[in-house]
Image (cartoon, rainbow, N blue to C red; front, side, top):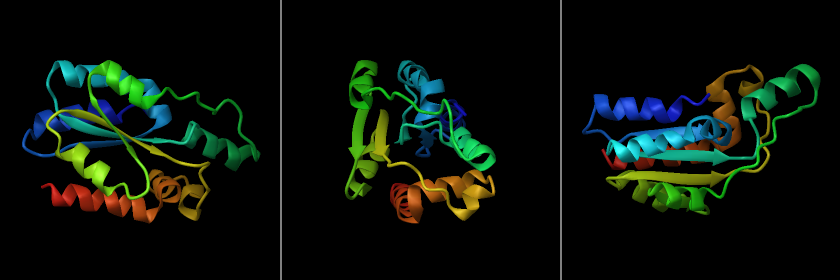
Length: 156
């Protein structure tokens, strides 16, 4: 957790001609979201897509699996738009058809934060197995993941 934004900055530095997108949950953002200031300061263009459901999702998932209930995993998220404004970065709220917001953010030559609001995640079969990819598919749904992949491919 908290690895997505620093990893995205490193990926952009390693491959400066490629578009870089960090996918992270709101708990991961709480841990390392202010690293976006480093991206601004060092002029490292990237897009951070934060999936905000108000939970520390993986820990919540493990607690539900082991104990049938979760404790201490609720998050009090900031106003991501106001936070982005205070950091001097772009912001978009992806709702309805998220593709235009994602395309504009990824095409940007700056640092952009895209917020995707999620309802309480369902626990799908692959998430029950503990696979991070399965958890992402269960929470985001294949349609949202396909939209992200399609948007990135179009901008290559």
